[in-house]
Image (cartoon, rainbow, N blue to C red; front, side, top):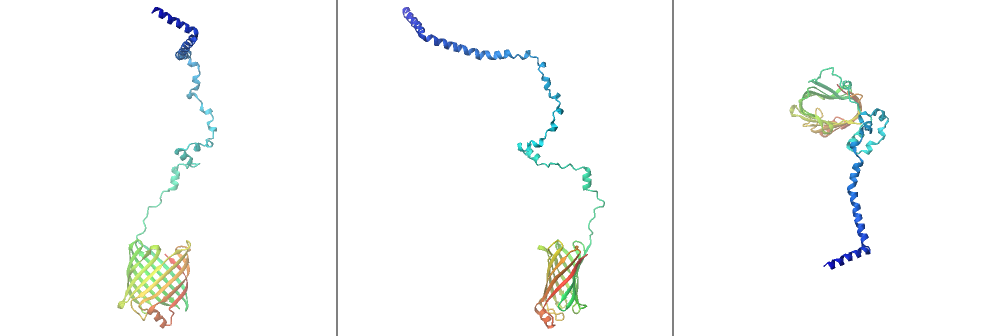
Length: 337
């Protein structure tokens, strides 16, 4: 055995001698070099910066104290922030609200501003009177008829409260200085809706022929599309009956120039030869008047009116030598008080 170990030792010495020894030495030196770099650097740094031995009082930290900074000398007032484009750069809602504010903000109202806008009331609050009145001459006109000039009127008025009123209605015509027709209605009106009244009362005919009286009842008011409508039924002596329908409209061409068309229809239940009235549809009158309102209370007008008789009424007129159709030019004024 000793002889064998001696051979191995000899072989090792031979290999070292042949060149393997330098590689082994280099590997040992490389590993030996890594160890000092990983362990000795922090120790070297801590050794170089030793804060415990520093004198901070001489480093000038006190010169940077914000409390001792003089901002008044920094010239902030000279900066023009309006040109910095903050609204463009900042897209947040708050920035958008600021950008939407007026360039000159509205000042907060003062007590003097409020006093000027709402002066103290000098009078106590007053309610409208309980009883009111109204008188309207809807037509007060001169008529240019085929047989000469004539005058005609149509008026109505009321006195009372908002719900209960006494109505007066009248219309008639004078020709050649004498009254050809005239009537007067006295009616009690009761509001049945904000726009409609039910009326009941009496009507008295002064002309033509001898006077006669009627019991009257009906409705009147403002229909949809602003048509003024009145429908009245009459019951007279000897079982005579009659019905009058009237509708008119006011078309505003301007605030002062107003076109007023109207239509009126009369029907009778019995013939009345003395008055020239036949049974059924008696007459239809249509008119068109153009007025100019210098004020709401005073308005002159011009217009055209046409009346036509039908049935037995037309026969009575032909027998008396009168025309069935009658076209008239009119001019007059419209007044209300």
